[in-house]
Length: 131
Length: 112
Image 1: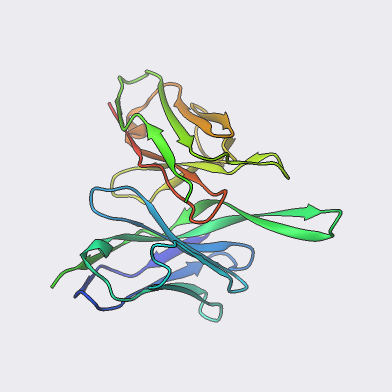
Image 2: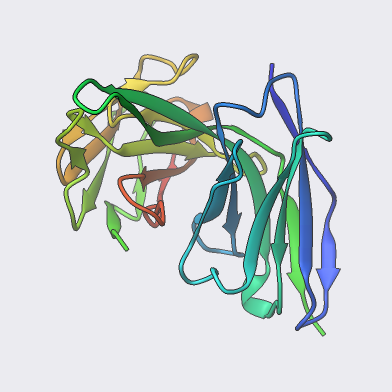
């Protein structure tokens, strides 16, 4: 049974850097997309970005200049770093495992990989940005 | 960004009643090379993390009760709860993963 463990709540001042880590236990890092999603107060879910086991990342364009997701295979964890935070970054932050589908193309002999859902989630970390 | 819009925003039903949520995308989510619809559905109960219900638009995740069903293709999708139970009170989200960023609908609140 895969389990994702997040840290506790954080209070940050504006312009500081948010750092969150998600520990992965009970399963491998390879073969999945490791993702971050957030939910601002009273609002819906917002996808932040993902990293796969080879270190390739995708980020939400609105956050791309401030966000970095990294993977530490030696510690079996992945991390989110968001710089220059403002009150708009106040949210519950979730880490999650993204499922990956491999589609083999006979003509090219190449595997194409597709994300297809977030099946395991951390418990969430409340981040408040306030002066 | 692909925009996915859910309707209604909220839904009040009686126990045992049927509930249907619609999700519409402004672009097709059907990938022609593998004939799969790149859309999923999640249930988000208060105080818990979201839970994956369906992927590829209609494939039920393991452990999801069969009173939940999902269908649709291209740009229009739906999630149906055949007989709503008390534990189904939650906000339901669709999510497209056809292209980055993988956007969520705004959510539909299901209440008893």
